[in-house]
Image (cartoon, rainbow, N blue to C red; front, side, top):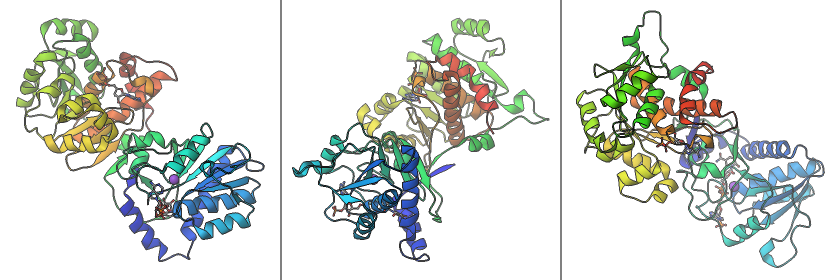
Length: 464
Ligand SMILES: NC(=O)C1=CN([C@@H]2O[C@H](COP(=O)(O)OP(=O)(O)OC[C@H]3O[C@@H](n4cnc5c(N)ncnc54)[C@H](OP(=O)(O)O)[C@@H]3O)[C@@H](O)[C@H]2O)[C@@H](O)CC1
Ligand SMILES: Nc1ncnc2c1ncn2[C@@H]1O[C@H](COP(=O)(O)OP(=O)(O)O)[C@@H](O)[C@H]1O
Ligand SMILES: [K+]
């Protein structure tokens, strides 16, 4: 599991360790890891040109000490000072190793002589306020197109919630220390991090609210059938979907009937039931006892009625698409809501852009408002429980942004609920598997929603 700690948690852990270690040990570990990552990115050190952007705090200190290491390995290292002060010991080490300070582009003097091979962003780290000063923005603009390695976080992002507020660095690689921070996992800030590499500092860290499941976590959460199981003990998932749009109903069915539950029932209108019979002989048509319902996908105006009928059964319910327009004041704890940003915006009465810019905050608001799990779909889908826990989905490919993919997901999450996973785990595991199936189906090319559903068993097979 990848865990994201808050700045406060990192500071506390750092303080405890600093008291035990000789001065400078942590910064030295950070700088060593950073320098190694830069060499990896450049494919070597000797003769490479490195430009450091140094702010006034320890983030600049990390960059300067890493710059000193790079200079000793034969890099030509130059530094632009962008803060009101500079990390003196770091700068001294850099100079002693042959690095030099050059004026920034906005100073009017001539800047670095040749185009760098990499820019190292040590402007601000976890001590920074969101946004960047104009000098920093100008300097970054000047080196547009050069790969950027951010130190700890891309400078300017909002570290503890993953928001973007004002200008920020967009990195190709972020080298972070001790643990991930929320901005490394949660969009839109996560998208500004590029690849993220973690350098271990030996921090002793507390449990966290924000995680990203890995394949091994999914493997241990997933309920696999045992020798004594039969189809009913494995769980039955029911669907009241496709009432207005049969295609969406069939796609939610494809997600539900991917083999994870013991049985799938389709309880939608007769016209769609005929299509279901023709397409899926393994699906039982007609209402009956189920362990979880899926409603809303392609539901149109009937989605409210479908939702009320499902809720009356008092089993966990996945509410997708049109169902989200008919939510009652309160929902049972086992409910999973699956909005995309536009649907969540409508649910909360805010703009879509507000949701996209502060995804964790809005998903938490919905989970709290309805007392249900909210699965906010996007590049990095978020699963948030009413108690504030969040799981970020790190699987998937942009090709997954295709019509009907959300219907498949709703069905899949319903199947997992039926197997007995709680709402949070079902949504987190379902979202992870959905992304993994998309990656497998895509293999670098375009995909359709039915192909994503078809790849779910293979995604399960490939779990460790
Ligand atoms: N914790 C750990 O375990 C370890 C942490 N380590 C490292 O320390 C870093 C944290 O260092 P930190 O605390 O010195 O803060 P940091 O982020 O460098 O900046 C603070 C200064 O920046 C300024 N400033 C603020 N906002 C700004 C803005 N928007 N735009 C421009 N400038 C802005 C402001 O100063 P001002 O210029 O306003 O005087 C403020 O004082 C951490 O990210 C990691 O890299 C490692 O060494 C290993 C162990
Ligand atoms: N940029 C992206 N990268 C990866 N996955 C994405 C991206 N954008 C959207 N997705 C995923 O694609 C799916 C789209 O679902 P949704 O918007 O509900 O489509 P539909 O309503 O047509 O079924 C979601 O699972 C979402 O997480
Ligand atoms: K930085």
